[in-house]
Image (tube, rainbow, N blue to C red; front, side, top):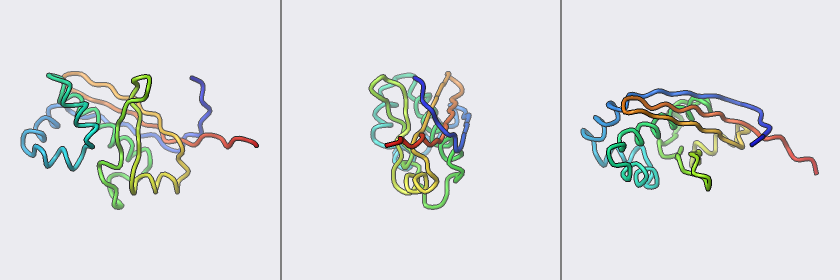
Length: 137
């Protein structure tokens, strides 16, 4: 895929899977409901023994997205405003909602590129926030 894109921001995050697994054990549904959407939970819960890795990768993706936009997790942004979903080709992609989507729009972000990876111990995500060129008409 060859897509012309003006990069407006880049964020990277690395997280220890055990940290997220501890949060899931210690805070259970409260943690899941605050941080993850129903779609993300359904995907992670279907992961069997890789459940913790899947949650950790989505957590890292959200952190990376907040960094790419330059907001961090503040300004009324909810964790669920950034959502990891899968495209038709199965690749993870970022869907934005609420205050996060509003701020992204103000800053001219029209496209997100997301890459995630995880092992038994670590999860990492990289997010590019960009603007596609205007189509001449």
